[in-house]
Image (cartoon, rainbow over all chains, first blue to last red; front, side, top):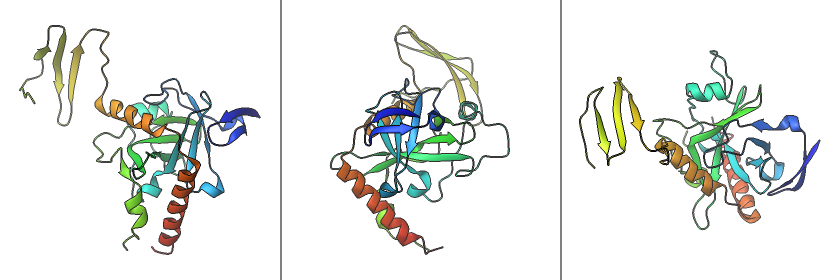
Length: 154
Length: 84
């Protein structure tokens, strides 16, 4: 087990095997190449993306389906290569991949999620990438509150 | 916005040391060659926007805000689960 001071949880003990490797970092944080993903029952459904390089850096994310139950992920050939995904069958979110949207919590503004550049994790080899969706129509500032407060139509 | 029409193989200049050449025109994409000084950063716009959004998302959130958000999201999930 390794230990690491973390942004939100004090000193963390984690297994190095649990880390996900981001070979290219993520835009704006090119040198952040390893993260661990933490869930806590009391903060469900939030996922904390803690950097293993910078203890004070921790993103807050939600599974994309929390923000949009019909979310469709499109992986570019470059992203597939970074995730080391072989050709078909098409990987399935939740079975083979985890797909998370980063949350922005600005002072005084409603929380938003970035559905246009989700964090995609390959569970088989623990590789990760921030996958920029081209021409998807998804927003980088998708409001998290309206869809949350509105009861779903059926 | 200045609009120009160019064919594959043609190019245009921005100032004296930036050249954009249209290399290939496909049905949904164009391939562009850029010659510019190495000191200029050239990024796909969506990468630059993602970068800016990541910098905002990296701002630490107060514990109260985290608790409020997870409570709100859990409450909405519970409401939506009994429905098809």
